[in-house]
Length: 214
Length: 214
Image (cartoon, rainbow over all chains, first blue to last red; front, top):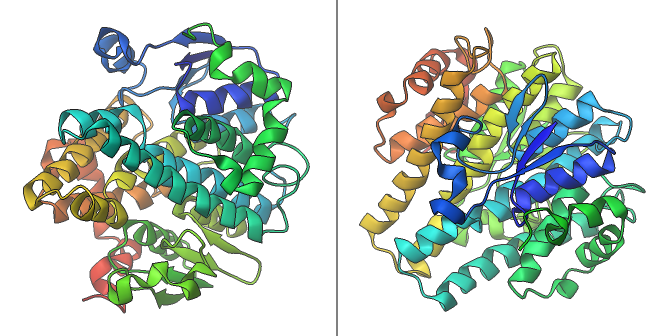
């Protein structure tokens, strides 16, 4: 298995956590998002992922992009350490939590969007940071409200073991902290994050532990 | 079953298509995104969806938000008309296609983001439209490239019957056309859309056919 990855990419970080939780060995192939005008946008990488984004995943059967699709694929192929609950409602809830991050928070703050804000809209550093903080703040508040109201939230996002939702939560918190957002304002998120970050699977997936870390 | 919906919401439109494809009856509860400062942001609706976004779905077992989580839930509870293929690789591919739309295109162009561009960043109409066209154009080009390279694309996004990917494609095309984007530049997308839009399940889900249509 190969993972095309960038150490600081939130979406790649999610997949690294999932692979580690399942104990799957993979080859990390770094794609540098800043070097050479963005290696992810070069023709060679677009043969792997025409979208020009990381991560991309390959095994003997498939080339796959989109972090959530990759994690669901891993969960179906290697079910031994499940990342989705067995019950229909539980599965729906875990997907919902992951999608709050994947659809409502992260897309507004990734590299290509920040580039557009700076290069096309000529935003200064303050306005760019206000944008980032606005969307992360709104998104984490939503996620916190969903976690707070649901009795299925356990020590982790859903119950007593990490699920796909935790694979999404930890990289989003890492991303928020890079922009000096204090996650103490979101007690359930802070609590779950603190529990996860010390687990070996999460530690090994951390950006600072990647072969391409700077 | 209840669907909190807004006729023009792309995310609600996806779920309406899925419900119709499965032949499921539901009560449509309109949430007006523009009236009363946005009914989706009011306390009453936030009891249903703390994120303050449509759609939200309720049945006797669950209250659920996020269009993709809702559709996967429907597919697991009512498998008679499947919206995901049976094989693991096919399922992964359908999720990937849906997520290209759900994660890489739509989040950048929904109402709350356009509002921020106009009210906070003071973008004029031209700059706002350039933003919309940029992200939809880039996203549809990615989707087109994914469809073009994969032999599993059939008359529909994946094979010979509509899947979750088609539930996402049609509302995204509708949205693109609202902003005068010519989808003829994306031949696979245009072809699949043309096939879908005349099917009864898609016709009945169209914004113009909703009880709250204006």
